[in-house]
Image 1 (cartoon, rainbow, N blue to C red):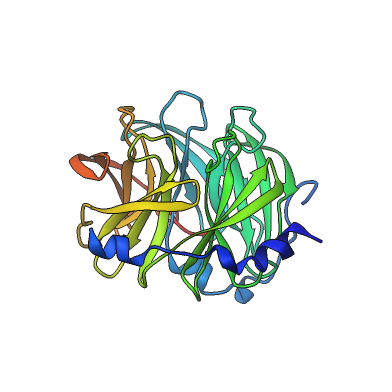
Image 2: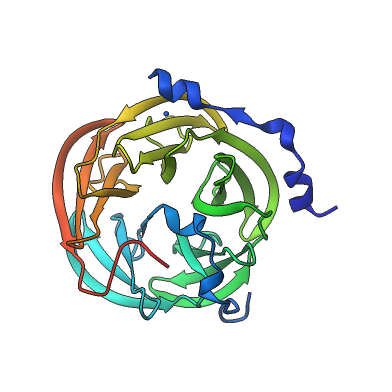
Length: 296
């Protein structure tokens, strides 16, 4: 039996986490093209950015997207300071860039792509900003989308974080490079909350969910052990006009920080945190016209 089918029927693994928050919340070269008009609203509903260390200097870098051309670009940063930029590969129509992580353990972040029409995933292997090769990943069950990646079983390989917009359920798919190994349900999110980042906020060597409520601008950390919700805590509330789009350790203090984006001004900002506590903030670079931190 195909592992995806087994996972799809494993309904007994559901974990509900609402009360905890309320109480304290290929291809040889590129994927096939599909009609962008067929893309479901769920994949467009929650803006998320992609950040990773593409030049190996220990500092997270921005991945920019051009919605008109579907071109990507890498902006190299030192903390919140722009150093230089270079163009990356162009994403095929119908596909969305969902995350960047080192899937083949060559010390270079790779692109994780999702096609919401076919439910297909793909990995684009990169060397810095350069596309090296691609491989399909597992196909997701109907109703699920790929939203993030992280190493949830501490085997050094990135895993998929899946989300079902109809049930608010999350799931972890454990991978070995691009190959599906097993799956487990994660916590169910409260209405109006979405996962916008994955990082270890409390320093226990387990990935945690960063959640954002776009209606109230409230943030929250859900502390996990593998796929299991341990507890939750609110983080700082995001200022009006800004959205929380990612998390990474920008000032190299061992604590993940918030990456904020203003869609109107194309301004970026970093909020420095200690666990879930706001410490200070700094503006990041402003993006050129036609480019965004969020999108395809």
